[in-house]
Length: 435
Ligand code: ADP
Ligand code: MG
Image 1 (cartoon, rainbow, N blue to C red):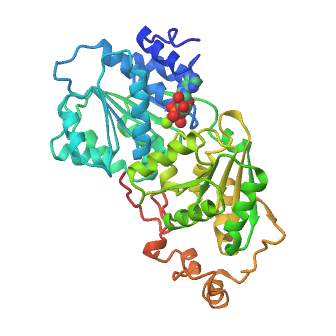
Image 2: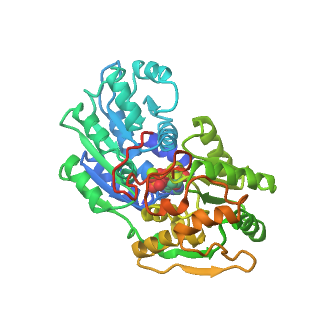
Image 3: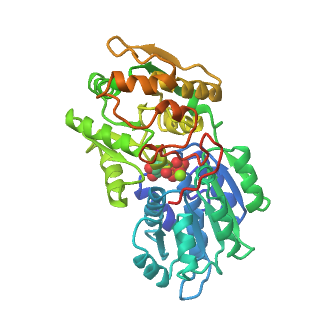
């Protein structure tokens, strides 16, 4: 099967050949033909399987094959959950549209809106956007949805997790009722089906490989470790294992910064990526990580969502996430595309509750070991451990918030709030994150 066999035009085939793609991926094989036929499509395939080209190529073909007014009204809209993803998808759109006469643009929050408004005014055929910024721009009348023919929801599961449903529905309310709808997602949960039912009409469902097949190739390893020794142990793991490309997750932005500083001090090239970093800094960190200028990327859950991070042999959970679903998202970063992967978690005694919740979700016990020299010494029950150990280990635990309280889902202290993506805290209240 070739891209031409799927019905794509020579100009598009030439562009993907230049990208080095020799044949369509399974999800591309399944999704491109029905999209070319103008059908609504609900597609699900693991991260890293080429979903972007799966919708971009047929949509570009539609846009080039149909007549449109000279002023180039917006005809196709791709919604993505994060800024990085929007930028990434737009990079792909630009590459795939190299040999066709199509104008594309990307808009997302966190950067000046003025140039975005100017670009939109100049006429754009296909726009990639995050929901929050796009709503703002629409409110300012910088963009019209009157001529939209195709709506694409990319990484729909993450958009759900991040609480974007209301924004999406609001945006849709401004669009013509008659349009093609495409929904792409890494998972096929009931929530996704519900979202799809509200938006798609008689969709063709395409799916590749059961969604948990990645998880099965991943080995889970837990090191029971003293909280104060996590950094030292991480450095040891990286150095002893000669690791070259590792993604490390922390629960807080502050934690990400602190760990990154310590890694750099230890002579390990690293960068942090989280919501408080400027867009420029995040893009640069990701680029440096991808081209191996830096070895370690330290990320919060929210920053890592949907990034096109290359296949990674190891993912390290410096701290366990307080929302068990985030663990599944995190380990989705390893063992991609048939390769084996290892998810390593450093768990101190106050995190054991999180571990049990993850084990419940995975229906699997995580293989735990204690390493000599790094044994947990803070073995008191969580609540007392927090207040007592602070006195006993003054310098090491100088944080002001009680971690024991955090386990009991009391309100978080501002500086230490986990940067969680799941939109559901342990309190169950939906939080909205705008990106
Ligand atoms: P997903 O959205 O499914 O997570 P992406 O669309 O981000 O995946 O694609 C993952 C990577 O695979 C990208 O680097 C992309 O350039 C590459 N890719 C996509 N399609 C093909 C193909 N047919 N052959 C080879 N590589 C591909
Ligand atoms: Mg994708």
